[in-house]
Length: 413
Image (tube, rainbow, N blue to C red; front, side, top):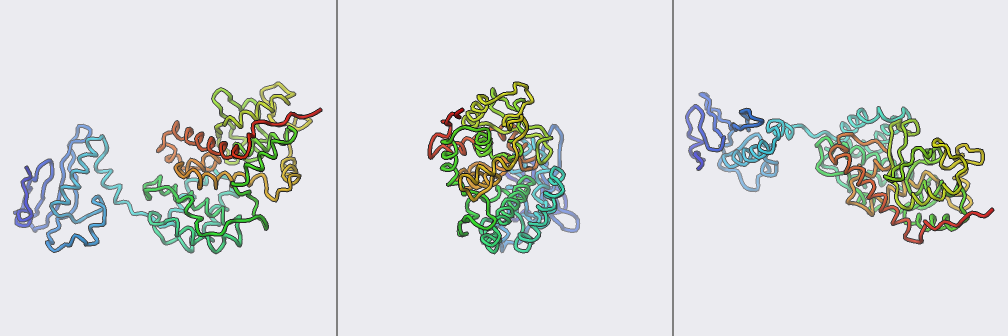
């Protein structure tokens, strides 16, 4: 049974007064009062300061301080001290460090500008100099003026939408990059405990005009990709068309597809293991393969001439890598105004709008964009790749919605 009362706390003499379950009231000779919790953690006794005593009897239930999470409060009445003590005791029982947990909640949440600089410093080591500079400069120009002074835990979809509105139709390519890069900063903030949620997804573009073809906007709307893929698959099978279908199915960069080797393909585990040398980030990366992607590979086997393991999956007639113009020409011949690289943006928009239960960090990883290692660890590495597999399976289902793109027409001659 608890040993303290509100009146007893107020009238307590100097010394240590037990409330029960390890909670103590400490009263100094000066009259200053504070709360202390004694717990056992990892077999050791720990004395944890909880905060000062609040003796003000006039606090209203509607007082603003009541909106502050209990771990953040520095001034506690008897009931609040018991609540905070109970929370820390549970953490200690679960094997967590109660002092670290208490102090974690005291870490100030940075504003967007500070989080951006921290994110850039941590992640840019894995990017090329040009990509790192573009990431920082684009957000400093377009996001910081609006979001810079906002705490990252207070940024919601409406704030990002309002930030994007002035550039959404004026410079759509940059707007899409700013949206994606803002999401990277907010996901980085979540991995550091500064936010409780991932970056907003589909809701960001609600209220913004739909992008249309024209200007320098090069990404096909994801709703139109199934029909395009079906049309592509209905034509005679060529190495170039197979490479483009594989690019669409894997959301990979065309250069990664054009330089893919059979030695990198693990059909048993349905993985495409790409070495660091082939990656833009210079970090090895594995892509999960859907049944549709595997079927494209089976068609490529039928056209294979070189049986060596290091042979290219999609070679030209000389056995060398296809040129990027080969895939671009297929797009032009199909009377498409979009680019091959734009299919990555199509996939990213599909992930945000049609599979919102998949964390943004997983979608970024599926595109081989850098995500903080602590994010990957938070989901556990095995779960992380399985979530990527689920995402790409969803994309495959979307692509097959118009027709079965697995049924490729045999080549003639």
